[in-house]
Image 1 (cartoon, one colour):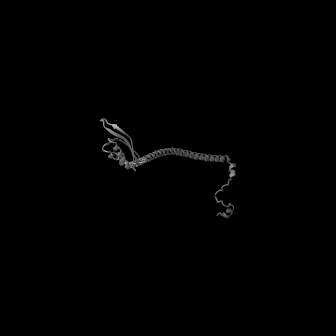
Image 2: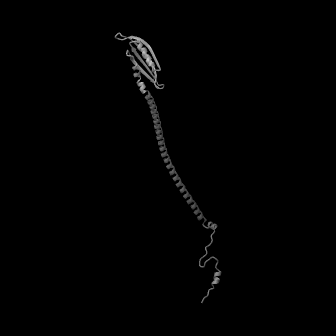
Amino acid sequence: MIKINLARVRKGKPEGVHAGIPAVPKIEIKELFKVGGEYYAGLLLWLVFVGMLGYYWKATSDIKALKEEVNRLKVEKTRLQGQAQRFMEEKNRIEKNIARLREEIQDIDTSKDIITTLKAYYEPFNSSLSFYTSYVPRTSWISSYKQTFDISQGLLKVELEINSLDYRSLSLYGNTLSRGSQKVLLTQVERKVNAHGFEYYSAKLTTERQLR
């Protein structure tokens, strides 16, 4: 029977190394360049090249995306400018319509004021002829009649020509009108003869009445 002293064998083994497993040699970085340095230098250059290639690809992709975004923004800007132009044209059209409507409303208000004012003078203006003819003496008649109205002063002016067979009737007619008028002026009294040989008197009369 063979006996093996295990204690002696264990004493000869270095610490941290298991039995039956060869120890891994320690290699320092500086030794790598001593043995096969060209290989590692080439590998490093390739890594740098790949990194630059990746950076270039990413930068190219970003530039392409930015160009697409710029083009999209240009298209959007053009669309918005066209839309803004249409809005401005519509705004100008609406403002012109509003200005036109304001003018029309102002004209309507002015016309309404004029109509309202004229309405107050409508009846006395139209009844003036009846007023001046109602006092004509039986021996007299009116051959011409004209009346004008100054709306700013409310003044009615009448010019008429009256004929009479006697002079006294003309004077009486003038005195009668003076009671309802501010001013009565009898002028150009003439003695005339008609086609049948009858004599008569003709006079022009101017009178003014205040309607307000």
